[in-house]
Length: 374
Image (cartoon, rainbow, N blue to C red; front, side, top):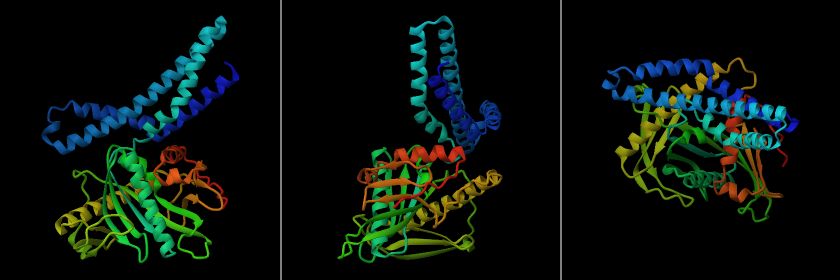
C-alpha cells in the first residue's frame, strides 16, 4: 500500500481503537446481549418506566457498536481492494479504492463524534450555569457574553432554551444564570464546556481604555429521567423565597416568588425565578436532582479512571478556553489546542469545532494543557 494510504489507514485504525476503548467494547457487547434478551420478555412493559430506560440504553449501545463495526468493515474493504488493485496493477480500481479510503478518513470525524455521544446521560436535556468571577462589572459583563454565546449555539443547533434564573450584576451583566437546554444529545454536546473561561479585551467600562482580563465559569449537568431515583430528604434542604429581576437584556419577570433551594449535605444551591412560586419550587427540585445525579456520574468516572494519572479535574482554577480580543483576535482551547481567529463568530455561538475536538480529546485520555500565549 502506498505510504500516503498507509498513513490514512493507520490513523483510521487508531481512531477506531479509541472508540472501542471509550465504549468498553467487550462489556458493551455483553450488555447488548442482555438487553436484547430482556427486550424479548413479554412482561417487560408491565413497568413502562423501566422498559423505556432499557430500550433507551439498548438503542444507545446498538448505535455505538454498529457505528464501530461499520467503520471497521469499510476500512477493511478499502484496504483489501487497494492491495488487490496493486497486485493486478489496475490503476482505475486503485484510484477508486484510494478515494474510498480518503472519503472514510474525511467522514471519520463526524462519525466519531456521533459514537462519542454514547455516555449514560449524553442523550438527555441539559442545564448549564454561568457564574462571574472576581472583578465586578468586567466579569459580570463577560458572564453575560458567555450566556448569550451558549444560547446562540443552542438556537443555531435547533435546541429549545429556557432561562430559568438570573442574578443581575450591580452595574451591568449578570452574576449568575441557570439555563435549561432541551433537545437530543444536549448534555452530550455541552458537557465538555464545564470549566473556567478567560476573556482579554480593552474594557468598555475603563475610561483609560486599558486591557482587562476577566474570568467566568460554566457548569453543565444533565436533566435526569423521572424513573431515576435520587433520594432527597426534607431535613437536608432549606427553601428560601426572594425577589428576582433580570438584567443584561435577559427578560425575567420581577416577582417575590423566586425560589432558592440549598442542599446541606453537599452545599449545592439551585434557583428558579419564573412567575409561579409552585413552578419555581418544582424547577429547583428538578435541578437539584440533576446536580446530585451529575455528582454520582462524576464519582463513577473518577472510579473508572483512577488508574490513569492523566485525569483532568475541572475546578475554578482550571481554565479551558481563552478568548483574546486585544491586542490580537484569537480563541484558543487550552485542552485541545483548537483555535479560531474569529472571536465574533465564536461568541455568536460557533462552538461545534471546539466541542467536537473536546469530545475526542476526552476519549483519547490525553491531558496536555496547551500553552496559552497572551
